[in-house]
Image (cartoon, rainbow, N blue to C red; front, top):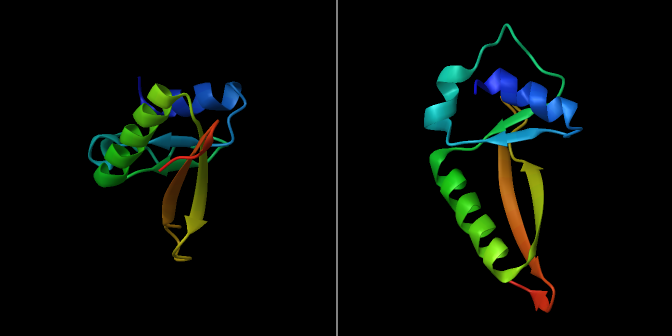
Amino acid sequence: MLLIDKVRFAEKSGALGLVVGPESRVVAQIDKTQRGRIPVVILDDLETKRLKKQLNEATLSGSVIRIAFEYVDFEPQYTLRLQVIILSLCGYGN
């Protein structure tokens, strides 16, 4: 499925944005002539691995994940830093 198709599906599903990665596989699919109505956040390879690991840990432990984005650079590319916090039912997880 192409990136623009994923964006359109996410839009129709009511998503606020779409997080995709790793960048090395996604960057070739970027078509600046076709834009969606929601932002697309592209994670680099390292952040993609981190997010996958934390999602797997949360799934195994039955935790809830809270994701916070922090703008770290206000240049035109709008670099985002991804922070993932895993909350378990018994307290806070790592």
